[in-house]
Image 1: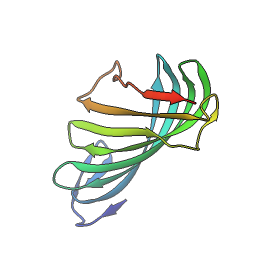
Image 2: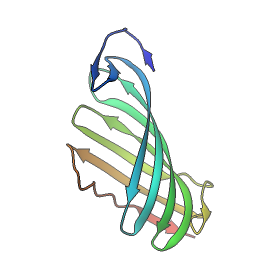
Image 3: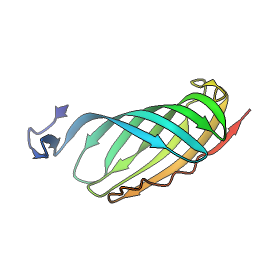
Image 4: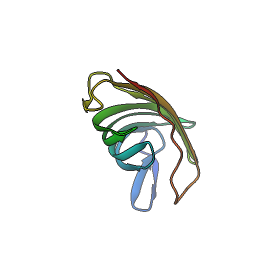
Length: 126
């Protein structure tokens, strides 16, 4: 983590800089036509308003019944109560039935949910 001003807040044992850079690793589970799991590594640039977020997620599972792995790129923003991101399939990073996967999705999360969040991937497999 890089803290520009050496000022921040600790919440639940985790330090959040007022301005700075940090890294987070998040695991996701997917159900439906997009089924499987992903590990996402985020880089977050904290600042006074919406913080820029960049991440890469390695997904393993099935998309519309095609099994394999692929990489999603997440580019967006986050603030205290929400996250929004454009998600794109990274070309050339797929394996198995997802080798030629192309696609994108919009992610908008507001608040906390124990039931998950909807994600619609618009895709094509050549």
